Image (cartoon, rainbow, N blue to C red; front, side, top):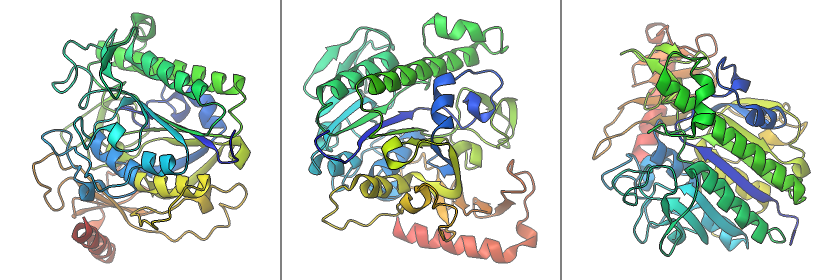
Length: 420
């Protein structure tokens, strides 16, 4: 290592929900390598993102609420990260890190919105919001596709997720004597659910849903790649001083089915209501694991305070000692005091109201598919109130008997809306 600053490997999967992991109780899918990571990581148990993919990425990479960054949809020019936003990769690059992205960008395919315009030196990505979608390279179908390498489209052999991890490993090996930020936002297990049958066939006898078997097969392939990447980091002697993060971008898309009221009718969702796109917790509460042996984050520990994607960038700036000479402000806050080993339990962490919403429209609409979240409450769509600790499935609307809480959370939303 060129300095004591840690490397960062950041894996972000697409459409994999909180319940799509065996360590979270899923009785069907098997994720042994992610389970192992879970067991030795700091785990944010009440961690929230956007209900859909591009807004989550915008908030994650800027520390700002997505609606204020120009990103509140996934198509139609509403997934372009405003050019004046400073990205996570910008912070790492100006602090002397090698930076690379491998997978799904989904924040703009043309200058000045491309990943190479936003701090990433090494780029291997597909176009648009998914492989095979209109903005992507013609004919791509997850296998032996052509991806953008920052200069041109190049054909890569193999399955998309395997390619992302293989290219990430090449990047890590090239930069192993330096410090690096390696961002691996996979497109899997987003639909279409395409994967080698060797991964999906074992699930055909475990679930009556053939499409869900393919979805779980994609998750199993991700799990295998995560395991291989962590083994290689250890072989290179990089695992001790590498922050390894795993999270997902929204609630499950392929692992559950819900009714018109967002209650789960099939599949496993860890007891939550809602799925991808929903304003209920199942749409935006996702896993977040952070492992860093040199920092003391190598023993499994839960952090139960309510947190969000906008907290991640300020947290990494503090943990990695990144240059923030511009004194940029964030909507999130550094979680470092909560994460410090042996200190989190004593840390006085004031409760706060966080907001997420789903705005798949040309322009945002106030209160639309929204949730205001504190440690104990969820205000949904400005009307429904749930005591989330006692009612994690959000079945009992208690707004009528807690008018003062509704008023307080509506005020928090109004302040948020005025800002974004």
